[in-house]
Amino acid sequence: MTSALTIILPTYDRRHVLERTIACYQRLAQHWPLLVVDDGSHDGTADWLRGLGITVLQQPHRGLPAARNAGLRAATTPWVLFGEDDVLMPDDTPARLLAWAQRLPRCAAVAPRLHTTTDWTLPTTAPNAGPGPLIDSARLGVAVDAVTDRPAALPIVHACALIDRSSALAVGGYDMAYAGSHFREESDFYARMWQHGRSVWLVPDTWAVHVRHRLGGGCRGPRGLVETLANRWSYWRNDARYIDRHARMWQHWGRTQASGISKLSSADRLLSNLSRQAMQRLGRAST
View 1: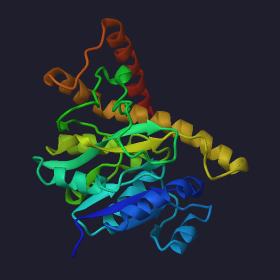
View 2 (view 1 turned 45 degrees about the vertical axis):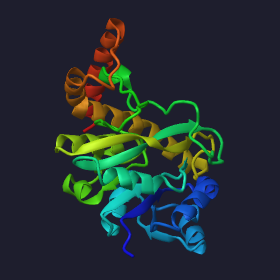
View 3 (view 1 turned 180 degrees about the vertical axis):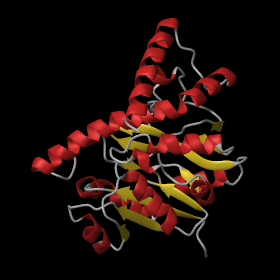
């Protein structure tokens, strides 16, 4: 039987993290094709995964947007679910997301609520603590509520979304301008989907957990230090680029949406405007 979705798992120098989460993805692979995209790791990730019987696509290190795009091109199913090497999800999460995607209007992406934890053991039920925030309200002037009791169409959703592959390719995939630190390439991708008239959905009854950890990167020594510093810079650069590109969209959305929006105080709005203007200048300067 032809599969409706492929699970794509990009990774780079994170074998030490995958060793704690790969069992989760192996369970998912019993029902759906799994493809790991190794973005030029130096820690033996690809050989180790192949030894476990997992399909691996290797490429020279070009950053997370390139790894995601390679997965999009390699998949042949109509839907792709992007996993992350420090995220765990229940076995029924892909099927639940697919069921939602097939009945939500103009659906280009549908995502679970993403909770945070420090435990590498997948809980049997969704954590009691609410999911993490969807966007930094202090810089964009809006606050989007990730706690919803019904499907919500939003310009941004949590990670590990199920994505309509044809829609993703139609907007050019993930923007390589966000290469470097894995930050904002997904946010920009969802915003461009939204601006092309497709809907991005957050659904209430499907969940995953992101494990906050201090395992660090796979590189050590001088190269590891250089990569850490480069990632810190690209983190700020990517944030600035996203704000420069999409702040106007968020302001419009905040004025027109009655639900899912938290009003900011006058002081918070002033700080938001100042921060946004500074980040926009940085975004233009780094383009």
